[in-house]
Length: 101
Image (cartoon, rainbow, N blue to C red; front, side, top):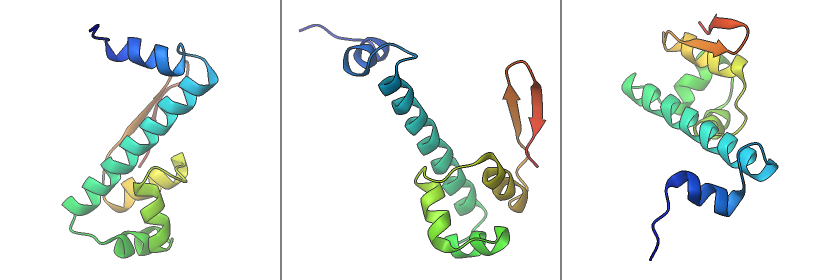
């Protein structure tokens, strides 16, 4: 039985980096991880989804979607970070750092 590295498994199943299916997969994983991080921060701040939603002007259902990795925009992420006093920087190739709060 041959063991595959994560990269080999992804290439065999989804294709090389830069292909449509692989890019979609990696984007979904990144969005999921951001959503999970937001959820952990919300819980650490002892906030319900409804309370966080009120802080940024959206319904509880929207917070649920965000925490599940859907409907993520930089603007919404920045609002959430600001509401919870989370300092964050976004690093953009060729542009540099952008503060999100």
